[in-house]
Image (spheres, helix red, strand yellow):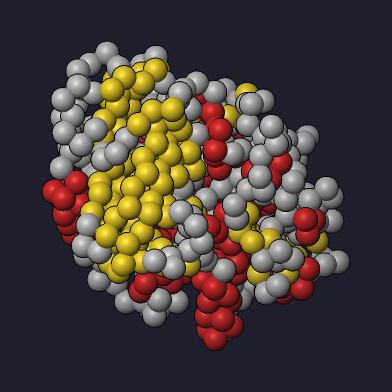
Length: 598
């Protein structure tokens, strides 16, 4: 059976409850959901295949015109369908619950005329493979079914439900003023059925929680809607219990159309740590910043020399990568990978990220637990031993290790931030402090000697490389060299000349990738930050607004944007992109806490 062409990535919106997230398409179909957690197996997988791999379609029959929006500053989505006979409003949300259980609520209301509606729920656990056994609920007032698959139970309640094999159907006509609610709950199959959810109370409570949270944001920016939507998206990707923040709620959405660069992003990357902290602190969300830092220290635990570059949302280390043969992939992009083998790579930059995060928290007055100082000492000692070794780089290359410039710079950051912390705390003996100061100078000199190419007047991707890499835009942002240094000015100019496409920035210049990969949206924000540091404020604003212009109709962005097809690419919505929007949107409008100081 051949699946239809996949829906464009920008057709999706996200809803979440702080434990997991679902993707809702413009046509009203929920095509992606992992239950009960971000990194659990998917039970709705049509995003990477078709309806037979799991979807919940709910929409009018026949032709419709569609518009949608988030309900104010919340993660409650409203989709309006205009049909020849009437207007239907669909409200989708996931209640934020205190009992740890997760649910989807879908409310249907007709505002004009009458509308015939059809719903079809096809749950398939195990990434599209395993349907539940369904049982009709006895005594359910509006109809309901309970289904079981191993440890998972799902319960659907709502009017007019019937079962056709493994699919639950409903078809009805609603008239103006009428309403129908459908609630899908997840629970453990080993426990009793959870109580039914009151949709009205759940909607009111969910709106209050989102609005109360974002209502704390009061920072100056010329792009308040984009920054607030990015903050809400980041919050939706944050686990309510652990403080971990996933890079995206999806897997398998390609970075290169039809290619094999299809990764699982449902994990927490240490690389994102300081970007994330900067965004949260500058936006005024200190509690969330502290929770993220505490998650970071728990994940590293007592063995900093064995740090991994990413972890599960609970801090677990096992991310075994495998291929899912039963899913055809988004527009045929295969293989579809679950897990991420890059977790075990050597990447020098993560040590700098962790120590930079610790330094940033110290500057912001955020308390750290008693293990933070010991972790910092062990991390910097480990960097001292390994900084001369090659690694896989910021972009997690699966080719032979190289001496990546950004990796070496972040090794320098690790030592520099440790020394800054020691200057505040005095925990390091003077002779040890002097040794590390000498090491910091040695790393700096090594990068400047071997990472800078005088022919191109630019820092390159790696030692001896002829390729540019947008990661070196971060050198002035982390304080490695001032922005007015001739070498930094040359690097920025080279990237503008050689890595720009459609007015946005590609992340690297390498064989086998080139322009077939989309432009990398976070890198475009980093260039805007550099422009602002060079006092090129109007150019910076223009570039930033170019990034915002490729967001979808509800303000969401993926990892990349494919200029030739004018489509979003990569896992969606992407935390790093929205973090960059927050940082740049605030940084262009006033003084903020900077990574490199200030």
